[in-house]
Length: 417
Image 1 (tube, rainbow, N blue to C red):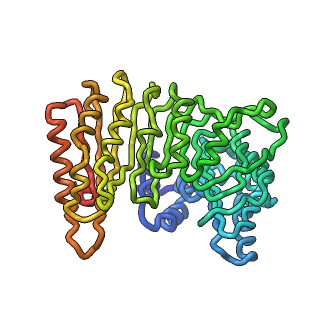
Image 2 (image 1 turned 60 degrees about the vertical axis):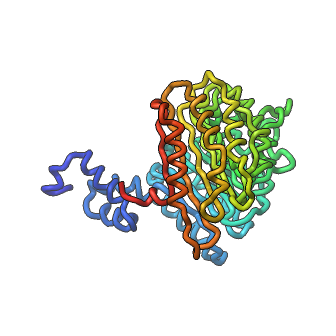
Image 3 (image 1 turned 135 degrees about the horizontal axis):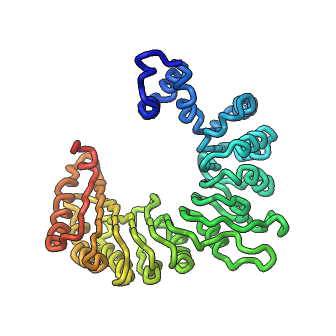
Protein backbone atom coordinates (compact mmCIF):
# COMPACT_ATOMS: atom_id res chain seq x y z
CA UNK A 1 0.00 0.00 0.00
CA UNK A 2 1.03 3.60 -0.50
CA UNK A 3 2.52 5.39 2.47
CA UNK A 4 2.08 9.10 3.19
CA UNK A 5 2.40 11.45 1.42
CA UNK A 6 1.59 9.27 -1.66
CA UNK A 7 -1.47 7.84 0.06
CA UNK A 8 -2.90 11.34 0.21
CA UNK A 9 -2.84 11.75 -3.57
CA UNK A 10 -6.03 11.44 -5.59
CA UNK A 11 -6.61 8.64 -8.08
CA UNK A 12 -6.51 11.20 -10.90
CA UNK A 13 -3.11 12.48 -9.78
CA UNK A 14 -1.68 8.97 -9.52
CA UNK A 15 -2.89 8.31 -13.07
CA UNK A 16 -1.29 11.56 -14.22
CA UNK A 17 2.07 10.59 -12.69
CA UNK A 18 2.08 7.33 -14.62
CA UNK A 19 0.90 8.93 -17.87
CA UNK A 20 3.55 11.67 -17.59
CA UNK A 21 6.30 9.13 -16.94
CA UNK A 22 5.18 7.15 -20.00
CA UNK A 23 5.83 10.20 -22.20
CA UNK A 24 9.48 10.61 -21.15
CA UNK A 25 12.43 9.42 -23.21
CA UNK A 26 13.50 5.89 -22.26
CA UNK A 27 10.01 5.65 -20.79
CA UNK A 28 9.81 1.87 -20.63
CA UNK A 29 12.54 1.48 -18.01
CA UNK A 30 11.16 4.36 -15.95
CA UNK A 31 7.58 3.07 -16.04
CA UNK A 32 8.84 -0.42 -15.12
CA UNK A 33 10.66 1.06 -12.11
CA UNK A 34 7.54 2.96 -11.11
CA UNK A 35 5.50 -0.25 -11.33
CA UNK A 36 7.84 -1.83 -8.76
CA UNK A 37 7.77 1.17 -6.43
CA UNK A 38 4.34 0.34 -5.01
CA UNK A 39 1.46 -1.96 -5.86
CA UNK A 40 -0.81 1.04 -6.29
CA UNK A 41 1.24 1.97 -9.36
CA UNK A 42 1.52 -1.55 -10.78
CA UNK A 43 -1.87 -1.89 -12.47
CA UNK A 44 -1.65 1.63 -13.88
CA UNK A 45 1.81 0.97 -15.32
CA UNK A 46 0.71 -2.26 -16.98
CA UNK A 47 -1.53 -0.30 -19.36
CA UNK A 48 1.67 1.23 -20.81
CA UNK A 49 4.14 -1.64 -20.38
CA UNK A 50 1.94 -4.17 -22.15
CA UNK A 51 0.16 -1.99 -24.72
CA UNK A 52 2.24 -3.44 -27.60
CA UNK A 53 2.97 -6.96 -28.77
CA UNK A 54 5.81 -6.79 -31.30
CA UNK A 55 7.30 -9.79 -33.06
CA UNK A 56 10.07 -8.44 -35.27
CA UNK A 57 12.22 -10.50 -37.62
CA UNK A 58 15.58 -8.73 -37.52
CA UNK A 59 17.31 -11.42 -39.61
CA UNK A 60 18.25 -13.38 -36.52
CA UNK A 61 19.00 -17.10 -36.70
CA UNK A 62 16.14 -19.58 -36.85
CA UNK A 63 16.83 -20.49 -33.22
CA UNK A 64 16.67 -16.84 -32.15
CA UNK A 65 13.48 -16.28 -34.13
CA UNK A 66 11.89 -19.33 -32.51
CA UNK A 67 12.98 -18.11 -29.07
CA UNK A 68 11.34 -14.73 -29.73
CA UNK A 69 7.98 -16.36 -30.43
CA UNK A 70 8.37 -18.69 -27.46
CA UNK A 71 9.14 -15.81 -25.09
CA UNK A 72 6.10 -13.78 -26.17
CA UNK A 73 3.82 -16.77 -25.76
CA UNK A 74 5.23 -17.75 -22.35
CA UNK A 75 4.59 -14.27 -20.90
CA UNK A 76 0.93 -14.25 -21.96
CA UNK A 77 0.40 -17.93 -21.16
CA UNK A 78 1.70 -17.33 -17.63
CA UNK A 79 -0.48 -14.23 -17.06
CA UNK A 80 -3.29 -14.17 -19.66
CA UNK A 81 -5.03 -11.09 -18.15
CA UNK A 82 -2.05 -8.97 -19.25
CA UNK A 83 -3.33 -9.35 -22.80
CA UNK A 84 -6.28 -7.06 -22.10
CA UNK A 85 -3.78 -4.15 -22.17
CA UNK A 86 -2.49 -4.98 -25.67
CA UNK A 87 -3.71 -2.42 -28.20
CA UNK A 88 -1.09 -2.76 -30.94
CA UNK A 89 0.21 -5.96 -32.53
CA UNK A 90 3.07 -5.76 -35.01
CA UNK A 91 4.58 -8.63 -36.95
CA UNK A 92 7.50 -7.46 -39.08
CA UNK A 93 9.05 -9.94 -41.51
CA UNK A 94 12.45 -9.86 -43.26
CA UNK A 95 12.66 -13.49 -44.40
CA UNK A 96 9.42 -14.37 -46.29
CA UNK A 97 9.07 -17.90 -44.89
CA UNK A 98 8.79 -16.42 -41.41
CA UNK A 99 5.37 -15.08 -42.33
CA UNK A 100 4.36 -18.61 -41.33
CA UNK A 101 4.50 -17.33 -37.75
CA UNK A 102 0.78 -16.69 -38.17
CA UNK A 103 0.07 -20.41 -38.42
CA UNK A 104 2.51 -21.30 -35.62
CA UNK A 105 0.63 -23.04 -32.80
CA UNK A 106 2.08 -20.63 -30.24
CA UNK A 107 0.87 -17.56 -32.13
CA UNK A 108 -2.55 -19.12 -32.48
CA UNK A 109 -2.58 -19.65 -28.73
CA UNK A 110 -1.62 -15.99 -28.29
CA UNK A 111 -4.50 -15.03 -30.58
CA UNK A 112 -6.91 -17.12 -28.52
CA UNK A 113 -5.71 -15.46 -25.30
CA UNK A 114 -6.18 -12.03 -26.89
CA UNK A 115 -9.66 -13.03 -27.95
CA UNK A 116 -10.48 -14.21 -24.42
CA UNK A 117 -9.45 -10.82 -23.01
CA UNK A 118 -10.83 -8.24 -25.45
CA UNK A 119 -10.47 -4.48 -25.10
CA UNK A 120 -11.84 -1.42 -26.85
CA UNK A 121 -10.05 -2.23 -30.11
CA UNK A 122 -6.74 -3.51 -31.44
CA UNK A 123 -4.49 -2.49 -34.31
CA UNK A 124 -2.65 -5.22 -36.28
CA UNK A 125 0.31 -4.38 -38.50
CA UNK A 126 1.57 -7.31 -40.57
CA UNK A 127 4.14 -6.72 -43.25
CA UNK A 128 7.55 -7.00 -44.80
CA UNK A 129 10.22 -4.81 -43.23
CA UNK A 130 11.43 -3.95 -46.74
CA UNK A 131 10.36 -4.83 -50.28
CA UNK A 132 7.48 -7.02 -51.42
CA UNK A 133 7.16 -10.80 -51.25
CA UNK A 134 4.48 -13.42 -51.95
CA UNK A 135 2.40 -14.33 -48.93
CA UNK A 136 3.36 -18.00 -48.52
CA UNK A 137 0.06 -19.36 -47.16
CA UNK A 138 -3.00 -17.19 -47.97
CA UNK A 139 -5.50 -19.68 -46.55
CA UNK A 140 -3.54 -20.05 -43.32
CA UNK A 141 -3.28 -16.26 -43.13
CA UNK A 142 -7.06 -15.85 -43.28
CA UNK A 143 -7.58 -18.59 -40.70
CA UNK A 144 -5.12 -16.91 -38.33
CA UNK A 145 -6.65 -13.47 -38.83
CA UNK A 146 -10.05 -14.96 -38.02
CA UNK A 147 -8.76 -15.84 -34.53
CA UNK A 148 -7.97 -12.17 -33.88
CA UNK A 149 -10.87 -10.82 -35.91
CA UNK A 150 -13.37 -10.04 -33.12
CA UNK A 151 -10.94 -7.64 -31.39
CA UNK A 152 -9.48 -5.89 -34.45
CA UNK A 153 -10.55 -2.34 -35.29
CA UNK A 154 -7.50 -1.43 -37.41
CA UNK A 155 -5.38 -3.46 -39.80
CA UNK A 156 -2.26 -2.44 -41.72
CA UNK A 157 -0.85 -4.74 -44.42
CA UNK A 158 2.53 -3.94 -45.97
CA UNK A 159 4.59 -5.47 -48.76
CA UNK A 160 2.56 -8.57 -49.62
CA UNK A 161 1.70 -10.02 -53.00
CA UNK A 162 -0.77 -12.91 -53.22
CA UNK A 163 -2.88 -11.26 -50.50
CA UNK A 164 -6.47 -12.57 -50.44
CA UNK A 165 -9.10 -9.87 -50.90
CA UNK A 166 -11.32 -11.83 -48.51
CA UNK A 167 -9.00 -10.95 -45.61
CA UNK A 168 -11.43 -8.42 -44.12
CA UNK A 169 -14.42 -10.75 -44.07
CA UNK A 170 -15.18 -12.03 -40.62
CA UNK A 171 -13.68 -8.93 -38.92
CA UNK A 172 -16.98 -7.45 -37.71
CA UNK A 173 -15.47 -4.53 -35.78
CA UNK A 174 -12.88 -3.44 -38.34
CA UNK A 175 -13.00 0.32 -39.00
CA UNK A 176 -9.61 1.32 -40.44
CA UNK A 177 -7.61 -0.32 -43.25
CA UNK A 178 -4.14 0.68 -44.47
CA UNK A 179 -2.63 -0.98 -47.54
CA UNK A 180 0.98 -0.34 -48.57
CA UNK A 181 2.50 -2.05 -51.61
CA UNK A 182 0.10 -5.00 -51.71
CA UNK A 183 -1.13 -7.12 -54.63
CA UNK A 184 -4.23 -9.36 -54.51
CA UNK A 185 -4.26 -13.12 -54.86
CA UNK A 186 -5.55 -14.26 -58.26
CA UNK A 187 -8.08 -16.70 -56.87
CA UNK A 188 -10.45 -16.78 -53.92
CA UNK A 189 -9.02 -18.75 -51.01
CA UNK A 190 -12.17 -19.09 -48.91
CA UNK A 191 -15.03 -21.38 -49.80
CA UNK A 192 -18.40 -19.62 -50.24
CA UNK A 193 -19.78 -21.23 -47.09
CA UNK A 194 -17.16 -19.46 -44.98
CA UNK A 195 -17.94 -15.96 -46.22
CA UNK A 196 -19.25 -13.36 -43.79
CA UNK A 197 -20.65 -9.91 -44.37
CA UNK A 198 -17.85 -7.38 -44.91
CA UNK A 199 -17.24 -4.89 -42.08
CA UNK A 200 -18.34 -1.27 -42.40
CA UNK A 201 -15.01 0.47 -42.97
CA UNK A 202 -14.79 4.13 -41.95
CA UNK A 203 -11.22 4.92 -43.05
CA UNK A 204 -9.24 3.54 -46.00
CA UNK A 205 -5.60 4.38 -46.73
CA UNK A 206 -3.77 2.88 -49.69
CA UNK A 207 -0.46 3.49 -51.43
CA UNK A 208 1.04 1.61 -54.39
CA UNK A 209 -1.81 -0.88 -54.06
CA UNK A 210 -3.98 -0.11 -57.08
CA UNK A 211 -4.54 -3.74 -58.09
CA UNK A 212 -5.90 -4.61 -54.66
CA UNK A 213 -8.24 -1.59 -54.70
CA UNK A 214 -9.38 -2.55 -58.20
CA UNK A 215 -10.28 -6.00 -56.88
CA UNK A 216 -12.27 -4.48 -54.00
CA UNK A 217 -14.18 -2.26 -56.43
CA UNK A 218 -15.31 -5.12 -58.68
CA UNK A 219 -19.01 -6.00 -58.62
CA UNK A 220 -19.68 -8.71 -56.02
CA UNK A 221 -19.64 -12.32 -57.09
CA UNK A 222 -23.20 -13.66 -57.12
CA UNK A 223 -22.08 -16.79 -55.29
CA UNK A 224 -19.82 -15.34 -52.61
CA UNK A 225 -21.17 -11.82 -52.17
CA UNK A 226 -19.23 -8.55 -51.66
CA UNK A 227 -15.76 -8.44 -50.12
CA UNK A 228 -15.91 -4.77 -49.13
CA UNK A 229 -18.61 -2.44 -47.83
CA UNK A 230 -18.20 1.17 -49.02
CA UNK A 231 -21.37 2.53 -47.43
CA UNK A 232 -19.74 3.87 -44.24
CA UNK A 233 -16.44 5.23 -45.55
CA UNK A 234 -15.73 8.65 -44.04
CA UNK A 235 -12.00 9.14 -44.67
CA UNK A 236 -9.91 8.30 -47.76
CA UNK A 237 -6.12 8.72 -47.89
CA UNK A 238 -4.08 8.15 -51.06
CA UNK A 239 -0.95 9.50 -52.77
CA UNK A 240 -1.69 12.21 -55.36
CA UNK A 241 1.55 11.33 -57.15
CA UNK A 242 0.87 7.66 -57.93
CA UNK A 243 -1.16 7.62 -61.15
CA UNK A 244 -2.27 4.00 -60.89
CA UNK A 245 -3.60 4.60 -57.38
CA UNK A 246 -5.34 7.83 -58.38
CA UNK A 247 -7.20 6.09 -61.22
CA UNK A 248 -9.40 4.39 -58.61
CA UNK A 249 -10.17 7.51 -56.57
CA UNK A 250 -13.16 8.59 -58.66
CA UNK A 251 -14.94 5.21 -58.43
CA UNK A 252 -14.46 5.37 -54.66
CA UNK A 253 -15.81 8.93 -54.56
CA UNK A 254 -18.83 7.79 -56.55
CA UNK A 255 -19.44 4.90 -54.16
CA UNK A 256 -19.09 7.07 -51.03
CA UNK A 257 -20.76 10.31 -52.13
CA UNK A 258 -23.22 10.15 -49.22
CA UNK A 259 -20.64 9.46 -46.47
CA UNK A 260 -17.13 10.73 -47.31
CA UNK A 261 -16.08 13.59 -45.01
CA UNK A 262 -12.29 13.81 -45.37
CA UNK A 263 -10.17 13.41 -48.50
CA UNK A 264 -6.44 13.23 -47.85
CA UNK A 265 -4.07 13.25 -50.83
CA UNK A 266 -1.07 13.01 -48.55
CA UNK A 267 0.93 9.78 -48.90
CA UNK A 268 4.59 10.49 -49.56
CA UNK A 269 6.12 9.56 -52.90
CA UNK A 270 9.61 9.40 -54.39
CA UNK A 271 8.31 11.43 -57.33
CA UNK A 272 9.38 15.05 -57.62
CA UNK A 273 6.85 15.94 -60.27
CA UNK A 274 3.23 16.90 -59.71
CA UNK A 275 0.65 14.59 -61.25
CA UNK A 276 -2.19 16.50 -62.97
CA UNK A 277 -5.40 15.71 -61.09
CA UNK A 278 -8.03 17.54 -63.14
CA UNK A 279 -9.07 14.49 -65.16
CA UNK A 280 -8.84 12.11 -62.21
CA UNK A 281 -10.88 13.80 -59.48
CA UNK A 282 -14.36 15.33 -59.54
CA UNK A 283 -15.82 16.33 -56.18
CA UNK A 284 -19.22 17.44 -57.39
CA UNK A 285 -21.14 14.59 -55.77
CA UNK A 286 -19.35 14.55 -52.38
CA UNK A 287 -22.24 15.88 -50.33
CA UNK A 288 -20.68 15.52 -46.88
CA UNK A 289 -17.09 16.54 -47.62
CA UNK A 290 -15.77 18.65 -44.75
CA UNK A 291 -12.00 18.61 -45.26
CA UNK A 292 -9.56 18.16 -48.13
CA UNK A 293 -5.77 18.03 -47.83
CA UNK A 294 -3.40 17.82 -50.79
CA UNK A 295 0.36 17.34 -50.98
CA UNK A 296 1.58 19.51 -53.87
CA UNK A 297 4.94 19.33 -55.64
CA UNK A 298 6.38 22.34 -57.47
CA UNK A 299 9.64 21.49 -59.18
CA UNK A 300 11.19 24.72 -60.42
CA UNK A 301 13.36 22.78 -62.88
CA UNK A 302 10.33 21.75 -64.93
CA UNK A 303 9.18 25.37 -65.39
CA UNK A 304 5.59 24.15 -65.04
CA UNK A 305 3.55 27.11 -63.81
CA UNK A 306 0.17 25.38 -64.13
CA UNK A 307 0.36 23.21 -61.00
CA UNK A 308 -1.96 25.41 -58.95
CA UNK A 309 -4.21 26.01 -61.95
CA UNK A 310 -4.81 22.26 -62.11
CA UNK A 311 -5.43 22.26 -58.38
CA UNK A 312 -8.05 24.98 -58.42
CA UNK A 313 -9.73 23.18 -61.33
CA UNK A 314 -10.13 20.22 -58.96
CA UNK A 315 -11.41 22.43 -56.14
CA UNK A 316 -13.71 24.05 -58.69
CA UNK A 317 -15.73 20.83 -58.86
CA UNK A 318 -16.83 21.32 -55.24
CA UNK A 319 -20.40 22.66 -55.49
CA UNK A 320 -21.30 26.10 -54.19
CA UNK A 321 -23.63 24.51 -51.68
CA UNK A 322 -21.09 22.62 -49.56
CA UNK A 323 -20.07 22.05 -45.95
CA UNK A 324 -16.28 22.21 -46.44
CA UNK A 325 -14.60 23.67 -43.35
CA UNK A 326 -10.91 22.93 -43.98
CA UNK A 327 -8.62 23.11 -47.00
CA UNK A 328 -4.96 22.26 -46.45
CA UNK A 329 -1.97 22.23 -48.80
CA UNK A 330 1.38 20.62 -48.07
CA UNK A 331 3.68 22.32 -50.56
CA UNK A 332 7.04 20.77 -51.49
CA UNK A 333 9.22 23.12 -53.57
CA UNK A 334 12.35 21.89 -55.36
CA UNK A 335 14.90 23.96 -57.26
CA UNK A 336 17.00 27.09 -56.86
CA UNK A 337 16.22 30.42 -55.26
CA UNK A 338 14.35 32.63 -55.84
CA UNK A 339 11.98 29.73 -56.72
CA UNK A 340 10.39 31.83 -59.45
CA UNK A 341 8.28 28.99 -60.85
CA UNK A 342 6.62 28.64 -57.45
CA UNK A 343 5.94 32.36 -57.14
CA UNK A 344 4.56 32.47 -60.71
CA UNK A 345 1.89 29.88 -59.96
CA UNK A 346 -1.75 30.98 -60.01
CA UNK A 347 -2.01 31.80 -56.32
CA UNK A 348 -4.73 34.38 -56.96
CA UNK A 349 -6.86 31.81 -58.76
CA UNK A 350 -6.38 29.31 -55.94
CA UNK A 351 -7.40 31.89 -53.35
CA UNK A 352 -10.48 32.84 -55.36
CA UNK A 353 -11.50 29.19 -55.36
CA UNK A 354 -11.05 28.99 -51.59
CA UNK A 355 -13.23 32.10 -51.21
CA UNK A 356 -15.90 30.58 -53.47
CA UNK A 357 -15.92 27.32 -51.51
CA UNK A 358 -16.16 29.20 -48.21
CA UNK A 359 -19.40 30.84 -49.40
CA UNK A 360 -19.10 33.35 -46.51
CA UNK A 361 -19.04 30.58 -43.89
CA UNK A 362 -16.05 30.03 -41.54
CA UNK A 363 -13.22 28.13 -43.25
CA UNK A 364 -9.66 27.24 -42.25
CA UNK A 365 -6.98 27.38 -44.95
CA UNK A 366 -3.69 25.71 -43.99
CA UNK A 367 -0.46 26.05 -45.98
CA UNK A 368 2.62 24.10 -44.95
CA UNK A 369 5.59 24.90 -47.19
CA UNK A 370 8.96 23.16 -47.39
CA UNK A 371 11.58 24.32 -49.91
CA UNK A 372 14.52 22.05 -50.75
CA UNK A 373 17.30 23.80 -52.70
CA UNK A 374 19.35 21.84 -55.23
CA UNK A 375 22.57 22.27 -53.31
CA UNK A 376 23.42 22.74 -49.66
CA UNK A 377 26.27 25.03 -50.76
CA UNK A 378 23.93 27.76 -51.98
CA UNK A 379 21.88 30.12 -49.85
CA UNK A 380 18.47 28.43 -49.80
CA UNK A 381 16.32 31.57 -49.92
CA UNK A 382 13.54 29.61 -48.24
CA UNK A 383 12.60 32.29 -45.72
CA UNK A 384 12.04 34.88 -48.44
CA UNK A 385 9.89 32.42 -50.42
CA UNK A 386 7.73 31.67 -47.39
CA UNK A 387 7.32 35.37 -46.68
CA UNK A 388 6.23 36.20 -50.22
CA UNK A 389 3.75 33.32 -50.38
CA UNK A 390 2.19 34.33 -47.10
CA UNK A 391 1.96 37.94 -48.27
CA UNK A 392 0.17 36.84 -51.46
CA UNK A 393 -2.39 34.80 -49.56
CA UNK A 394 -2.95 37.34 -46.80
CA UNK A 395 -3.56 39.98 -49.45
CA UNK A 396 -6.08 37.76 -51.26
CA UNK A 397 -7.95 37.09 -48.00
CA UNK A 398 -7.67 40.63 -46.61
CA UNK A 399 -11.40 41.29 -46.87
CA UNK A 400 -12.47 37.69 -46.15
CA UNK A 401 -12.60 37.77 -42.36
CA UNK A 402 -14.41 34.43 -42.21
CA UNK A 403 -11.34 32.64 -43.67
CA UNK A 404 -8.62 31.81 -41.13
CA UNK A 405 -5.19 31.43 -42.76
CA UNK A 406 -2.72 29.13 -40.97
CA UNK A 407 0.78 29.30 -42.51
CA UNK A 408 3.53 26.93 -41.41
CA UNK A 409 6.93 26.11 -42.87
CA UNK A 410 10.07 24.19 -42.01
CA UNK A 411 11.54 27.31 -40.39
CA UNK A 412 8.60 28.46 -38.27
CA UNK A 413 7.94 24.83 -37.34
CA UNK A 414 11.05 24.80 -35.15
CA UNK A 415 10.77 28.32 -33.77
CA UNK A 416 9.34 28.62 -30.26
CA UNK A 417 6.03 30.45 -30.10
